[in-house]
Image 1 (cartoon, rainbow, N blue to C red):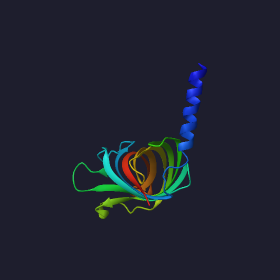
Image 2 (tube, rainbow, N blue to C red):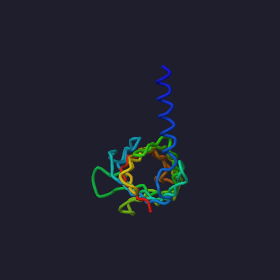
Image 3 (cartoon, one colour):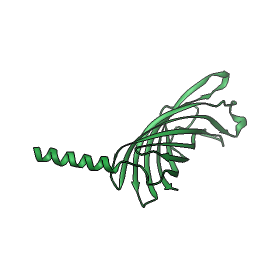
Image 4 (tube, rainbow, N blue to C red):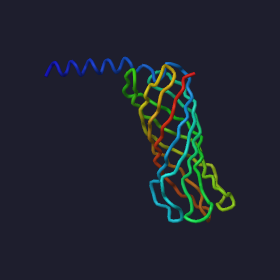
Length: 184
């Protein structure tokens, strides 16, 4: 029993020592492809998984890093016709590494920003105001080389959009992403 506890303790110390940084470089850029799932049914739209993307610049302090970026994801389509709507969000993303080794790091992240629903064609949608977008999630960074890491993550985020009659409707989404982070 004591031997098992000693081995577990040494493993944790090894993880803690190697988790001093998410990246060997202070600055990095990241690009990701995403699949977005609406969390509630919209009666007027097809509610299916949709594609999106995001890009961000990150500054790493050690276990903590801060990213600033832009995300765009198609979230709705009509069953007939050409109409689609995408969530467009500018965001800040604080990230904290919970566990790390020389090859991987497990992290949690929050996300706060401003965004709006972008309709195409715009004339088929009520005018949209910019609103707050909030979310959080986590993921794993897999080190591919000294400067490159793969980011496999997921998050939940929500925002509000305008509907006819001046009302606003809150919508939530789950985003699963796969990206590359490149240290500068």
